[in-house]
Amino acid sequence: MVITSPRRVRRTGNRTSTCHLLRRSHFGGSKAHEWHQRRLRKEAPVLIAQITDLHIGFSGSETGGYNTHRLKAVLERLVDGPNRPDLLLMSGDMTEFGDPQSYARLAELVRDCPFPVAPMVGNHDMRAAMLQAFPDCPDNSGFVQYAIDLGPLRVLVLDTLEEGRHGGAFCEARAAWLSAELAAHPDRPTVIAMHHPPFESGIDWLDSDEREPWITRLTEAVSGHAQIRGIVAGHLHRPIHTLWEGIPVTVVGSTAATVALDLNPVDPDRPDGRTMISSELPVYALHRWDGRRLVSHTEAVGALDALARYDEAFQEVVRVIVGERPD
Image 1 (cartoon, helix red, strand yellow):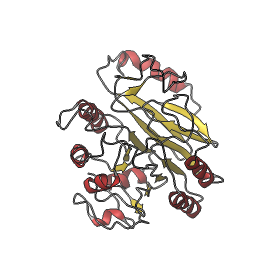
Image 2 (image 1 turned 120 degrees about the vertical axis):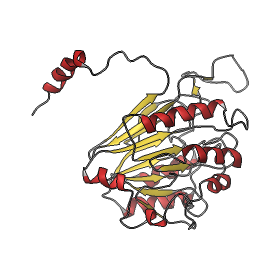
Image 3 (image 1 turned 90 degrees about the vertical axis):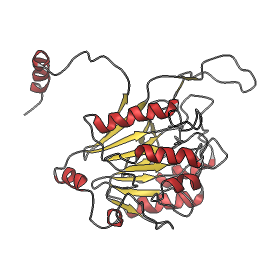
Image 4 (image 1 turned 60 degrees about the vertical axis):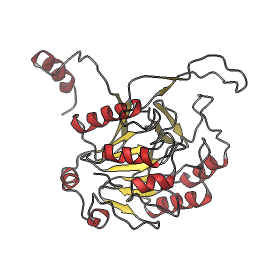
């Protein structure tokens, strides 16, 4: 099912249409999907899967393109693997060119996911085409920003897109929305999801300058809000972790391609033959909220050898480790 929130979306924008895959009741009040209700009754940890930088359409219009195959492998892992998420964030650069055909193809790929899917925009995206393919995605005064209620945890989805620009953007209107959402729920643990990371990673050709106005506005908006437990982002095509303004930030690698780990300066006027982008296994992240902290895991998806299985031979290892814990 393709939806924006499994429990409740705070609708502060202008869009009122509902997805044809979904009943309107899924968007408000206390009604939620039965599966999520069962999880919350058991006080199970909240699991948020994140995929980013899908770049569907990069290899042309054919449905069997390289990036499409890699995304399918990740989705199969999420559906068939041991960790069924409560929500799947698609954190921007969902397509390569922002064309309607690629968004339609992506919507079809995630249509049958047995968990809610939340679209986001990045610098390769086009809002109008994306919203056409995902008609239930809230539109807050022209920006793809919305709140997701996951019971014990809130997720605030930010729009850092300025169409035609590779770097991030966060105008006064978007900052005001974020400030209002944070002020309205000061005691609710909150995760912020955005495409562009607001810090310098050392990957010279992709980094933002932390003096840019959009980062200054974001800094001011989050200042003093202790309920923010983490920020999750994409854009850099690598798994990266840091603290920014005292907030843990996790950048997730791409399902499509990997940016080379090269922390040396790049001269825009002197190509030097270094590797810039490589083909590694597609990855996704799983963010686990247990009521106290947000823990983020990254998994690469592909053909790997199992070096150990939980059989009788491995049972003693498990017993020893678990037995060391306090009763």
